Image (cartoon, rainbow, N blue to C red; front, side, top):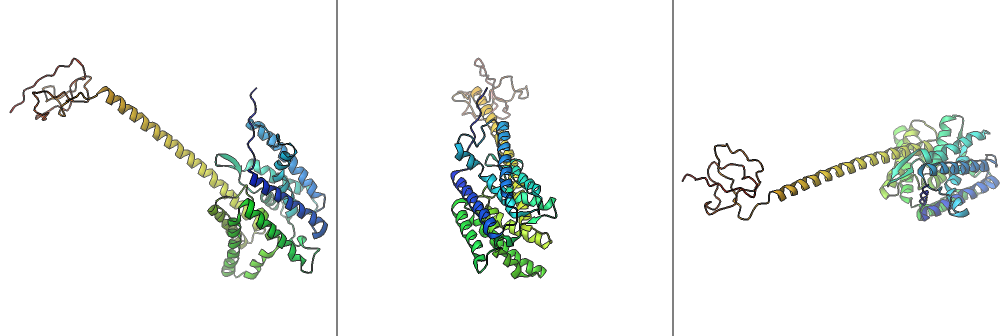
Length: 386
């Protein structure tokens, strides 16, 4: 029985550190939210969400490892390895529960967590030779809930500051903004995406105001809310489902802002989540298309190289078979009554120059066929009319 392939590291150390800090931040926010801020979901639901996410992540990893003939990624690193493996599921599960509101139907929240965690194994595309998920898991889970259950909604923004006042209601978004900006600047390196997203969001609010006579201040005021700050620093910047290049980040952030503006102009609610899901889907289609095109070009290049090598080998073989002898005349033999029929085995080189050949001058009516390529071939002298 062959040994299983060793699983490659799931994330590089920088991304792992970012995931760890994301997980700590969202965990602290949940504890603080249920004890101080005023989260309205039952306090047991985060625990149910975590249990669901952890279980599904481990089951899918075992099945995936068996199908790919490798060891599960949570093995071999001890308790730390298991913890780091479960960081994405931890973040996704808490985010789906915290940002969605499904009344008292816990099974709908559980369904959203299952969709969010499971989509990482379904919606994948080739990226630099590896299959990677391209759909933002938490965002997609919430978007599916909103589509399938029209009575559901996102968590009311006031729950983040419901029980604090006296100016402290500005402290929460300020802390989230500061910590999130530091995290994205130093670890995820998604500041270009954030700048493009924030700038694009402000631009679309102004454009909608000019085109549809909506309130520009109201559109811009949304940027000051806790929900927008959370979305900007902890949702749209997911390092696993966003580009890493500068222009790729700018295109992604600007596209989400533009898509949000279009959806809002069409009176579609919850545009933040739908816009992000649509742009992630477009990026996934682009990745698949780029992979197909690159493979086709590689195949064409290999085929061209094979043809070139075959022609080169044929030319080399012909040159070896018909090597021109020293002193060979540049003109072929004169024409005869045989209408210049090439004899069998004729060499590509002309007959050797002799004293009778005046400097290899081509006689009138010379045949285009060379002399036969045989060692015993005798030179036939044909008188040339003066």
